[in-house]
Image 1 (cartoon, helix red, strand yellow):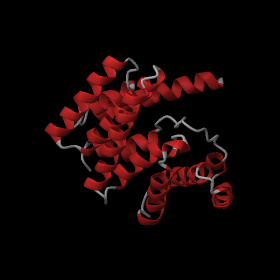
Image 2 (tube, rainbow, N blue to C red):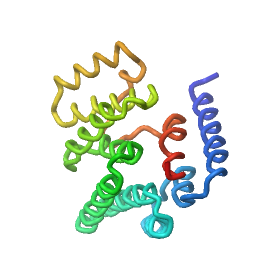
Image 3 (cartoon, helix red, strand yellow):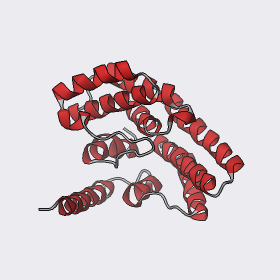
Length: 216
């Protein structure tokens, strides 16, 4: 089977698993829709989606809706930056980070919410100033939540390595990377590209997203 065919099969299985899992929970339908389809790219559609996410959070009180609301604001900021409306982009980015941080502060012991923040902040360009937050989250996750599944712990280590490198902490990053090479070479060798977060995978879906939507 070709690499492309493997990717298609994985995507189909992923979509089937999402649909099956989401059918069991209607706690946050707006978030569920984004997980299935992704955020739109047109500004008007993005505004509509972000408004719906905030309404969902206000009605349901599900912290995941607030996290995805912040994601939506940051997507909007990116779209405004693309059309050179830097003032609007800056304001939306500030709001996005404010609500993302608020989501963690509202439930500081919820490792899944912290993971969702770290996952976003890790892959942002360093000039956005989120390196310190990303490093704090990934290290707290690594040290404080020892019962996490092995694959998630490896992803957290990878986030640490990238954040340290992104924040010019290369020596510490290299040390962590050597540990990863011994434990799980495939993850350690995954390309780390600024601004290019990896797609959600099955482990994140089962252990982070779905439980978060269910309010666990």
